Image (cartoon, rainbow, N blue to C red):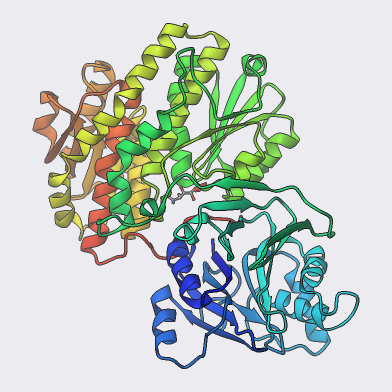
Amino acid sequence: MCGIVGYTGPRQALPLVLEGLRRLEYRGYDSAGVAIVDGEGGLSTAKKAGVLGNLEHFIDSGDVALAGLTGMGHTRWATHGGPTDRNAHPHTDATGRVAVIHNGIIENFVTIRKDLESRGIEMRSDTDTEVVAHLLGQAFAQGPTAGDLPASMAAVCRCLEGAFTLVAGHADVPGMLVAARRNSPLVIGVGDGEMFLASDVAAFIAHTREAVELGQDQLVVITSHGYEVTSFSGREADFKAFHVNWDLSAAEKGGYPTFMDKEIAEQPHALADTLLGHFDGNGIVLDEQRLGEDELRTIDKVFVVACGTAFHSGLIGKYAIEHWTRLPVEVELASEFRYRDPVLDRETLVVAVSQSGETADTLEAVRHARRQRARVLAICNTNGSQIPRESDAVLYTHAGPEVGVAATKTFLAQVTANYLVGLALAQARGTKYRDEVTREFELLSEMPAAVATTLTLMDPIRELAADISRSKAVLFLGRHVGFPVALEGALKLKELAYMHAEGFAAGELKHGPIALIEEGLPVVVITPSPKADPMLHSKLLSNIREIQARGARTIVIAEEGDDTVAPFADFLLELPRVPKLFQPLVATIPLQILAAEIARSRGYDIDKPRNLAKSVTVE
Ligand code: AGP
């Protein structure tokens, strides 16, 4: 939610800031803006509503001089104030000499705004951020922190409530940027005689792979000579330096038309890399394990908390974890979890699933669980992000950076990680013998190849997509692990193609939703294996018959060689045979491609669906 970039060093800042913004545009694309400190006592800004390209065109028109060695940029996902030029960041104070960019929400901005207005300050935007620029301008101009930008920023931060990453620069202090964070991400890129600030390392990976991750309530000052981290009260603070172990090509499109196409194609690797290093011959290994085997053994119930696609991965995980561990598992939307007073104690394991590791709803669910003394295990794709930092144990999905807003490879990686959690618990609790855990892991290790084969079978789905792109709606049906796959298929179609789509448990259809079926309505059905579960298969076959009899156009995803289903399928796609619990790893792929292709044929940008942002850092 909002992307932030800062640079100071010997090079012109503008091209580096724009390059960083391009890599962070997945975080929001309602507007974009830059501010450059020119080193001669001036500060200039340029900002435009809409995608980054609008700002670039505006800058190319040459109306604003943006030369200087220190600069910052922002790409916005609007929370307070519409996506307009005037609400775009950076925001400046009344003098125009200080500029601020912000990711997050200042919860007490209304009170601050009223106070500023009562003192005659005129607001020029509807944002919560602008108040920070005014407060900072005032703190720098007079009082105990006058002329000291870091001290002014620290003083302002102490007055703010909510979530924020802030970066500020001042015309009077060329060569310096000051940044602060609370509940929103911020990393420092340490270059050779130059320094970067960003929401995500992708912004500066082309220039340095040495990074520093800031902790909660910390402030950093960067100059071309280095960086200094303190707490908001000015005390020395601990921080973590790390080396980024992926390179620029991982954040580029690599010849694919969109990031989403590339990320779908990368799924076999995402799965294989997620499995890598998580089995050492003796059993399943977690990444950061601050929970002893003894503690895992005492767990008597599991909650999986997550949002959106990550939530669907948890729904799949439930089937596996319950099957292998015999522990009750509840899967809950993170945004609902803490509001219903769930029954949590030291024997509860809360599994928090999040690609970004910064989703506010999931983070708050983690905090709630920890306050109730539950143990928290994070499944996360972003090294060192907030959710794993606040958890007792971590299992990283090594899917690599995902830029497309719609989660694809990280979903498959999350599902895989849920299986690993199930096996780790089964191993700790002794509900599976060691050789059984090993056998399941071996079967799981065959899945990257099955996913690769599945990807070669997708041409018919692409043709079908063009055909149904004008439909009013699409329904998705499944049973057992096919049900969450149906939910995920519907979510992908909604978010990418802006079509009405619903996922249902196939058996539930006759209890109401079957009334939606009308002549020609496309219904995608995820069919279980007839060999692995003949009863479930025959029940689903009946459901297909019921909808076909009512005129639905049946689009059936089935296991290769499933002859019984063919007569009821208007369209049939056969997928490789895989173990029953692992079917989502192959069955989700055609649904991702269906949604992407329908969206494309409707003329939409599949990397940047409207109204969305990759990381949702507000509740
Ligand atoms: C799905 O395509 C979305 N990107 C969204 O539902 C996402 O999965 C959700 O916002 C959770 O994000 P997280 O995994 O980063 O926590």
